[in-house]
Length: 102
Image (tube, rainbow, N blue to C red; front, side):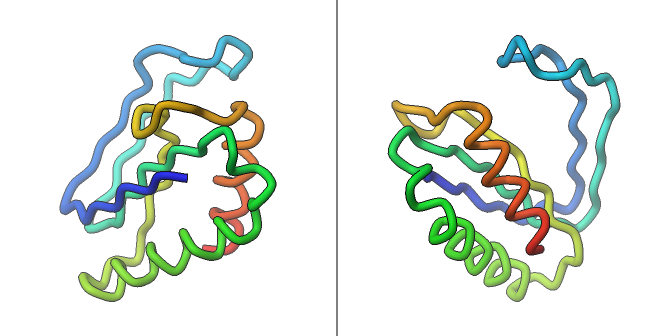
């Protein structure tokens, strides 16, 4: 898994195009102020280590949040940080577990 963490004062996201054809259509916009932005790339070899990766990622997110004090975290699947990617369902499961634990 590749994880790029950023602290952002203002963040806005508007869906532009689907990269996974079977994903639901979404037109809603999302905005956050004073948040940790986590760009997550789940690689092809990551699914067997799912639980370990979730724990490690959450520790990193909490560490950055402790530095700046934000109460919001934006989890964003970002498939451009490595050469290989896991199946979309594996990435969705990992992000869902991170969301539930945060």
